[in-house]
Image 1 (tube, helix red, strand yellow):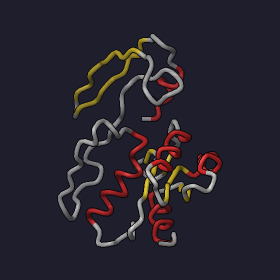
Image 2: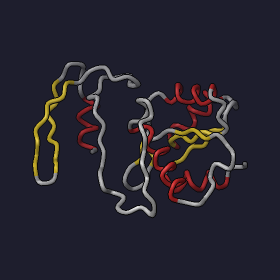
Image 3: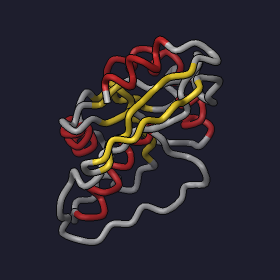
Length: 169
């Protein structure tokens, strides 16, 4: 995962990047051409990485539906919180409209995303009560929010749960 991110960060528009996809015991070479990717301010590979079968068994069946093209790595934190909400009896929202962004790693850490300014402005326009953002982007998000939405920076999934539990309803 980190190797692909490193290669992608160095790629220039039009560069052909050679990757190897592992499926079970098979290794499949793939060439990807770097170019413009919506939401990025630099060329990208236009692919997303996904770890499958990492969670194992959940106490209930969970199905994520098509979100009309929204998603990708920056939706990771909110997808994880949605799954928690579906398998738990806990009411973290408590009547609030909650938005958030941040990639999420297998160890639960929440990482940086692109276009934080635009995402905060979208949350404000949607009249959101609380917005979760990666901790290392909280300062920028707070400046953009200018008090129009409560911004909470989180470094981990566990911290996101804790902050939602502690935040005033």
